[in-house]
Length: 218
Image 1 (tube, rainbow, N blue to C red):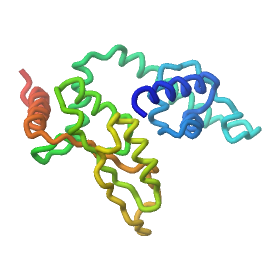
Image 2 (image 1 turned 45 degrees about the vertical axis):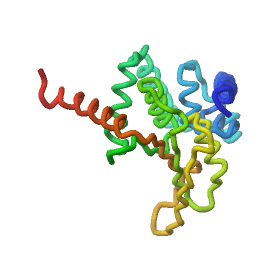
Image 3 (image 1 turned 90 degrees about the horizontal axis):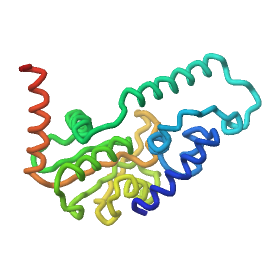
Image 4 (image 1 turned 30 degrees about the vertical axis):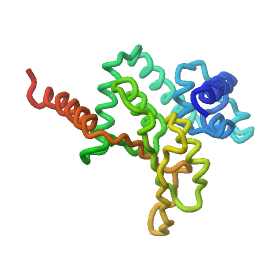
């Protein structure tokens, strides 16, 4: 679908949010991740929950629930004001922190796995802006439970990461295990990979340089 599709969905999401649709209702309507909707609509602060989009219930929400939602929304607004405009260096520091915690440490390949579409989108955006890469060498592999729609998951992650589906490797299909938790991510876990020993070394060196500033200040 590419970036054009993203713009259409983003515009529609913002329009629905302005009509007091909840994030989950918008995600369901557009067939996208709730995290994507949250990112697209994060600057729409004048939002009043609409009872019609809450299961069409005529019952008033519990006061504690109203208080909780108001506090969460205020935290979001305060956080937006605190972040302000982000520079390229800000993005780099955030991406390095992500990679230090979630990235591949095995030599030879720059890669990160996550179920969160926003975090992987930030990571691939940073890679594209910071380094000169060959887009055709980007690879994605999905970890998806049996019974879930692999084609839908592939389309989802292809749209989020802007990587063609023909650059996706064969997915790993996890067999259901009744002894483990039943909750499953409908789009699975995606691993974004770029094979480059030099690039991997550079990123780990950047993480090490930042870390050393705190271990050995000055």
